[in-house]
Image (cartoon, rainbow, N blue to C red):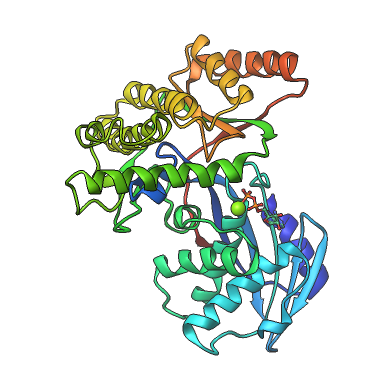
Length: 384
Ligand code: ADP
Ligand code: MG
């Protein structure tokens, strides 16, 4: 359906037809606030993504039409050609970042694109957009850019053209995602490993609280500072090789109790436990043990709420409700202070859980949460 919709607009704006490419939004099953501590994240691509029809146009200009926003943009490849529409800067940024790495290799193209990743809901619609175009240009022009570099092109696009100082996880998941697999990424070494995710009898569903509390960025900076403070203290306590909280275990943390504030201690405790939880969940998945996966998700929520203190009443409410309904696993996904919970729900509980969550959440907070069922799916690819 999306494909027909895109093609109709492609024909209308450019005539004829092009090649189809797609990429995906992502979830992170577990591993929150671990990336900047040298730990692991555990994302996967989802069945909501971006799709584009693209064709070289024989010029040195890009003409691109956003089907969803009903807006077009045209630009060249020089830095001063940057378009003003924010959506178009993602496409322009990808072009510029390719040029920075590969030189004058791009050719003008026409493209129409659309997507079904909800914008700003925590599933990274922006990474889906970047990786669709990065993958497509690499493929069409045979640039031989490796997949990691394609992800970095998306990340640099956010940094340099969209003002978002993000990590690599979103673009990594969008490029590397595979149906039926989650990917454990070691944020220190950048090594990654696929793990099977076949939750037979369960569904994954995100409940979007549709709130974003404003303290997020200042609180985030304070959390990072706490982590650094503890690393410095542990180093000074006779562990000079420690570089990140990844290198610290609970016994080492206990050695600095009283030397760091109770708050910093709690923050570090959460991070150390969370890094271990990712490993535990990977082990559980290799045994198809989804009950353990779910239990770890609740532990993460508890840690984020009570130790790292990045939850909020709306998210805690959704988490409590999941527990009361007998949902297998539930936790806040993303940095916190709003956004979604991710829930692992048995098939037979799904309908009653969703209707109760919608009803009770609305009664308490005056608006409905949004409901996004997701299936782990393929990332960037060419469509036949
Ligand atoms: P997210 O968390 O979903 O990545 P961002 O704010 O990072 O949210 O990115 C959203 C931006 O990406 C939008 O404002 C828009 O510029 C662009 N974008 C995402 N999806 C689409 C789409 N379907 N069509 C056009 N632009 C899109
Ligand atoms: Mg984004």
